[in-house]
Length: 283
Image 1 (cartoon, rainbow, N blue to C red):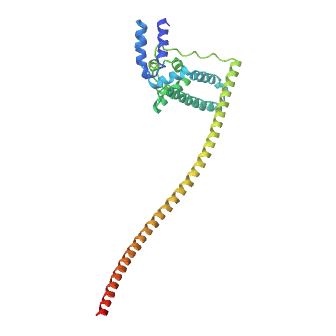
Image 2: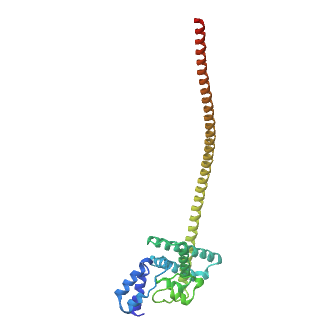
Image 3: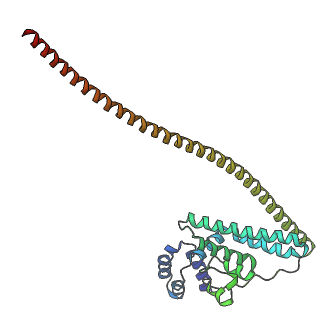
Protein backbone atom coordinates (compact mmCIF):
# COMPACT_ATOMS: atom_id res chain seq x y z
CA UNK A 1 0.00 0.00 0.00
CA UNK A 2 1.33 3.46 -0.93
CA UNK A 3 1.87 6.16 1.65
CA UNK A 4 -1.03 8.19 0.24
CA UNK A 5 -3.33 5.18 0.42
CA UNK A 6 -2.33 4.54 4.03
CA UNK A 7 -2.80 8.20 4.93
CA UNK A 8 -6.19 8.21 3.19
CA UNK A 9 -7.25 5.18 5.22
CA UNK A 10 -6.11 6.90 8.41
CA UNK A 11 -7.97 10.10 7.55
CA UNK A 12 -11.10 8.14 6.60
CA UNK A 13 -11.09 6.25 9.91
CA UNK A 14 -10.82 9.50 11.87
CA UNK A 15 -13.50 11.31 9.87
CA UNK A 16 -15.94 8.38 9.87
CA UNK A 17 -15.85 8.24 13.66
CA UNK A 18 -17.34 11.75 13.77
CA UNK A 19 -21.13 12.20 14.06
CA UNK A 20 -22.61 12.25 10.53
CA UNK A 21 -23.79 15.84 10.98
CA UNK A 22 -20.17 16.97 11.39
CA UNK A 23 -18.67 14.77 8.67
CA UNK A 24 -19.00 16.96 5.57
CA UNK A 25 -17.50 20.10 7.08
CA UNK A 26 -14.65 18.16 8.70
CA UNK A 27 -13.94 16.23 5.48
CA UNK A 28 -13.76 19.41 3.40
CA UNK A 29 -11.49 21.08 5.93
CA UNK A 30 -9.21 18.02 6.05
CA UNK A 31 -9.11 17.79 2.24
CA UNK A 32 -8.16 21.46 1.88
CA UNK A 33 -5.41 21.08 4.49
CA UNK A 34 -3.98 17.95 2.85
CA UNK A 35 -4.04 19.19 -0.75
CA UNK A 36 -2.71 17.24 -3.71
CA UNK A 37 -3.79 13.68 -4.49
CA UNK A 38 -4.44 12.92 -0.83
CA UNK A 39 -6.69 15.95 -0.52
CA UNK A 40 -8.63 14.91 -3.61
CA UNK A 41 -9.02 11.41 -2.17
CA UNK A 42 -10.28 12.80 1.13
CA UNK A 43 -12.73 15.09 -0.68
CA UNK A 44 -14.28 12.05 -2.38
CA UNK A 45 -15.01 10.25 0.90
CA UNK A 46 -18.71 9.55 1.26
CA UNK A 47 -20.72 10.57 4.29
CA UNK A 48 -21.55 7.43 6.32
CA UNK A 49 -25.07 6.32 7.06
CA UNK A 50 -26.01 6.61 10.72
CA UNK A 51 -25.91 2.80 11.05
CA UNK A 52 -22.40 2.60 9.54
CA UNK A 53 -21.18 5.40 11.82
CA UNK A 54 -22.58 3.59 14.89
CA UNK A 55 -20.72 0.41 13.86
CA UNK A 56 -17.51 2.44 13.48
CA UNK A 57 -18.01 3.66 17.06
CA UNK A 58 -18.37 0.03 18.16
CA UNK A 59 -15.12 -0.87 16.39
CA UNK A 60 -13.32 1.99 18.18
CA UNK A 61 -14.82 0.75 21.45
CA UNK A 62 -13.02 -2.57 20.93
CA UNK A 63 -15.84 -4.94 21.78
CA UNK A 64 -16.63 -5.93 18.19
CA UNK A 65 -13.06 -7.08 17.60
CA UNK A 66 -13.24 -9.23 20.73
CA UNK A 67 -16.54 -10.73 19.54
CA UNK A 68 -15.05 -11.60 16.14
CA UNK A 69 -12.07 -13.31 17.82
CA UNK A 70 -14.41 -15.30 20.06
CA UNK A 71 -16.48 -16.33 17.06
CA UNK A 72 -13.36 -17.59 15.27
CA UNK A 73 -12.28 -19.57 18.31
CA UNK A 74 -15.71 -21.18 18.60
CA UNK A 75 -15.69 -21.98 14.88
CA UNK A 76 -12.31 -23.68 15.18
CA UNK A 77 -13.57 -25.75 18.12
CA UNK A 78 -16.92 -26.73 16.68
CA UNK A 79 -15.75 -30.15 15.43
CA UNK A 80 -15.43 -31.22 19.05
CA UNK A 81 -18.88 -30.00 20.07
CA UNK A 82 -22.12 -31.96 19.96
CA UNK A 83 -25.37 -30.67 18.47
CA UNK A 84 -26.73 -29.44 21.79
CA UNK A 85 -23.57 -27.44 22.54
CA UNK A 86 -23.57 -26.00 19.04
CA UNK A 87 -27.19 -24.95 19.47
CA UNK A 88 -26.31 -23.23 22.75
CA UNK A 89 -23.39 -21.49 21.08
CA UNK A 90 -25.71 -20.35 18.30
CA UNK A 91 -28.03 -18.82 20.87
CA UNK A 92 -25.06 -17.22 22.59
CA UNK A 93 -23.91 -15.70 19.29
CA UNK A 94 -27.36 -14.20 18.71
CA UNK A 95 -27.40 -12.79 22.25
CA UNK A 96 -23.90 -11.39 21.73
CA UNK A 97 -24.87 -9.71 18.47
CA UNK A 98 -27.96 -8.15 20.09
CA UNK A 99 -25.86 -6.94 23.04
CA UNK A 100 -23.28 -5.38 20.69
CA UNK A 101 -26.05 -3.62 18.75
CA UNK A 102 -27.38 -2.18 22.02
CA UNK A 103 -23.84 -1.06 22.92
CA UNK A 104 -23.55 0.70 19.55
CA UNK A 105 -26.88 2.43 20.21
CA UNK A 106 -25.63 3.56 23.63
CA UNK A 107 -22.41 4.93 22.11
CA UNK A 108 -24.40 6.78 19.44
CA UNK A 109 -26.71 8.29 22.06
CA UNK A 110 -23.71 9.39 24.12
CA UNK A 111 -22.37 11.08 20.98
CA UNK A 112 -25.64 12.97 20.59
CA UNK A 113 -27.30 10.91 17.83
CA UNK A 114 -29.86 8.40 19.19
CA UNK A 115 -30.64 5.52 16.82
CA UNK A 116 -34.11 4.73 15.53
CA UNK A 117 -35.42 1.16 15.60
CA UNK A 118 -34.72 0.75 11.86
CA UNK A 119 -31.14 2.00 12.21
CA UNK A 120 -30.53 -0.26 15.23
CA UNK A 121 -31.76 -3.20 13.14
CA UNK A 122 -29.27 -2.28 10.39
CA UNK A 123 -26.49 -2.10 12.99
CA UNK A 124 -27.42 -5.56 14.31
CA UNK A 125 -27.39 -7.05 10.80
CA UNK A 126 -23.96 -5.53 10.14
CA UNK A 127 -22.55 -6.84 13.43
CA UNK A 128 -23.98 -10.29 12.71
CA UNK A 129 -22.39 -10.26 9.25
CA UNK A 130 -19.00 -9.40 10.79
CA UNK A 131 -19.27 -12.16 13.37
CA UNK A 132 -20.35 -14.77 10.81
CA UNK A 133 -18.25 -13.87 7.76
CA UNK A 134 -14.47 -13.32 7.89
CA UNK A 135 -14.45 -11.15 4.76
CA UNK A 136 -17.10 -8.85 6.19
CA UNK A 137 -15.24 -8.78 9.51
CA UNK A 138 -12.08 -7.54 7.79
CA UNK A 139 -14.02 -4.69 6.19
CA UNK A 140 -16.02 -3.75 9.28
CA UNK A 141 -13.03 -3.82 11.64
CA UNK A 142 -11.27 -1.11 9.62
CA UNK A 143 -13.63 1.38 11.30
CA UNK A 144 -14.13 2.95 7.85
CA UNK A 145 -17.65 1.73 7.12
CA UNK A 146 -19.88 4.08 5.10
CA UNK A 147 -22.90 1.78 4.64
CA UNK A 148 -24.52 -1.00 6.64
CA UNK A 149 -24.00 -4.61 5.50
CA UNK A 150 -26.64 -7.33 5.30
CA UNK A 151 -25.54 -10.90 4.58
CA UNK A 152 -28.81 -11.49 2.71
CA UNK A 153 -27.86 -8.85 0.11
CA UNK A 154 -24.09 -9.27 0.15
CA UNK A 155 -21.93 -9.43 -2.96
CA UNK A 156 -18.36 -8.39 -3.72
CA UNK A 157 -19.29 -5.02 -5.22
CA UNK A 158 -21.58 -4.13 -2.32
CA UNK A 159 -18.85 -5.00 0.17
CA UNK A 160 -16.32 -2.80 -1.61
CA UNK A 161 -18.78 0.09 -1.74
CA UNK A 162 -19.47 -0.19 1.97
CA UNK A 163 -15.95 0.81 3.04
CA UNK A 164 -14.00 4.03 2.50
CA UNK A 165 -10.40 3.83 1.36
CA UNK A 166 -8.72 0.53 0.68
CA UNK A 167 -10.66 -2.73 0.84
CA UNK A 168 -8.90 -5.20 3.16
CA UNK A 169 -8.63 -8.88 2.39
CA UNK A 170 -10.10 -11.39 4.76
CA UNK A 171 -7.79 -12.80 7.36
CA UNK A 172 -6.34 -16.12 6.18
CA UNK A 173 -8.03 -19.22 7.44
CA UNK A 174 -6.26 -20.54 10.52
CA UNK A 175 -4.04 -23.57 10.20
CA UNK A 176 -5.41 -26.80 11.64
CA UNK A 177 -4.99 -26.43 15.39
CA UNK A 178 -2.55 -28.57 17.32
CA UNK A 179 -3.75 -30.44 20.39
CA UNK A 180 -2.93 -27.58 22.76
CA UNK A 181 -4.71 -25.00 20.58
CA UNK A 182 -7.69 -27.32 20.22
CA UNK A 183 -7.91 -27.81 23.98
CA UNK A 184 -7.66 -24.07 24.53
CA UNK A 185 -10.35 -23.40 21.95
CA UNK A 186 -12.61 -26.00 23.52
CA UNK A 187 -12.05 -24.53 26.96
CA UNK A 188 -12.83 -21.07 25.61
CA UNK A 189 -16.01 -22.42 24.04
CA UNK A 190 -17.01 -24.21 27.24
CA UNK A 191 -16.30 -21.08 29.28
CA UNK A 192 -18.41 -19.03 26.90
CA UNK A 193 -21.25 -21.54 27.24
CA UNK A 194 -21.04 -21.47 31.05
CA UNK A 195 -21.03 -17.68 31.07
CA UNK A 196 -24.03 -17.61 28.75
CA UNK A 197 -25.85 -20.14 30.94
CA UNK A 198 -25.09 -18.10 34.07
CA UNK A 199 -26.30 -14.97 32.33
CA UNK A 200 -29.48 -16.78 31.31
CA UNK A 201 -30.03 -18.07 34.88
CA UNK A 202 -29.47 -14.57 36.26
CA UNK A 203 -31.89 -13.15 33.73
CA UNK A 204 -34.51 -15.77 34.60
CA UNK A 205 -34.14 -15.05 38.32
CA UNK A 206 -34.47 -11.34 37.69
CA UNK A 207 -37.52 -11.98 35.50
CA UNK A 208 -39.10 -14.09 38.27
CA UNK A 209 -38.47 -11.32 40.80
CA UNK A 210 -39.92 -8.72 38.44
CA UNK A 211 -42.94 -10.95 37.76
CA UNK A 212 -43.52 -11.24 41.52
CA UNK A 213 -43.25 -7.48 42.03
CA UNK A 214 -45.56 -6.93 39.08
CA UNK A 215 -48.16 -9.34 40.49
CA UNK A 216 -48.00 -7.59 43.87
CA UNK A 217 -48.35 -4.19 42.24
CA UNK A 218 -51.29 -5.36 40.14
CA UNK A 219 -53.03 -6.82 43.21
CA UNK A 220 -52.59 -3.56 45.12
CA UNK A 221 -53.78 -1.57 42.10
CA UNK A 222 -56.89 -3.77 41.88
CA UNK A 223 -57.63 -3.27 45.59
CA UNK A 224 -57.22 0.47 45.29
CA UNK A 225 -59.38 0.53 42.17
CA UNK A 226 -62.12 -1.34 44.03
CA UNK A 227 -61.82 1.13 46.90
CA UNK A 228 -61.99 4.08 44.51
CA UNK A 229 -65.06 2.58 42.83
CA UNK A 230 -66.70 2.09 46.25
CA UNK A 231 -65.91 5.65 47.31
CA UNK A 232 -67.31 6.95 44.04
CA UNK A 233 -70.52 4.97 44.60
CA UNK A 234 -70.75 6.37 48.14
CA UNK A 235 -70.20 9.86 46.76
CA UNK A 236 -72.98 9.40 44.21
CA UNK A 237 -75.37 8.20 46.94
CA UNK A 238 -74.40 11.09 49.21
CA UNK A 239 -74.93 13.58 46.39
CA UNK A 240 -78.38 12.08 45.66
CA UNK A 241 -79.32 12.24 49.35
CA UNK A 242 -78.06 15.83 49.58
CA UNK A 243 -80.17 16.79 46.56
CA UNK A 244 -83.22 15.12 48.13
CA UNK A 245 -82.59 16.88 51.46
CA UNK A 246 -82.23 20.23 49.72
CA UNK A 247 -85.58 19.65 48.00
CA UNK A 248 -87.17 18.83 51.39
CA UNK A 249 -85.70 22.01 52.89
CA UNK A 250 -87.08 24.07 50.03
CA UNK A 251 -90.53 22.47 50.49
CA UNK A 252 -90.50 23.17 54.25
CA UNK A 253 -89.32 26.74 53.64
CA UNK A 254 -92.28 27.29 51.29
CA UNK A 255 -94.69 25.78 53.85
CA UNK A 256 -93.21 28.03 56.54
CA UNK A 257 -93.54 31.06 54.28
CA UNK A 258 -97.20 30.22 53.58
CA UNK A 259 -97.91 29.64 57.30
CA UNK A 260 -96.31 32.96 58.22
CA UNK A 261 -98.43 34.76 55.63
CA UNK A 262 -101.58 33.05 56.95
CA UNK A 263 -100.66 34.05 60.51
CA UNK A 264 -100.22 37.65 59.47
CA UNK A 265 -103.59 37.63 57.70
CA UNK A 266 -105.27 36.12 60.78
CA UNK A 267 -103.69 38.75 63.04
CA UNK A 268 -104.98 41.55 60.86
CA UNK A 269 -108.47 39.99 60.81
CA UNK A 270 -108.42 39.73 64.61
CA UNK A 271 -107.46 43.38 64.88
CA UNK A 272 -110.35 44.37 62.64
CA UNK A 273 -112.79 42.20 64.59
CA UNK A 274 -111.71 43.68 67.90
CA UNK A 275 -111.96 47.21 66.51
CA UNK A 276 -115.54 46.54 65.29
CA UNK A 277 -116.51 45.08 68.65
CA UNK A 278 -115.13 48.06 70.52
CA UNK A 279 -116.95 50.45 68.20
CA UNK A 280 -120.31 48.66 68.79
CA UNK A 281 -119.86 48.79 72.55
CA UNK A 282 -119.33 52.55 72.51
CA UNK A 283 -122.55 53.08 70.57
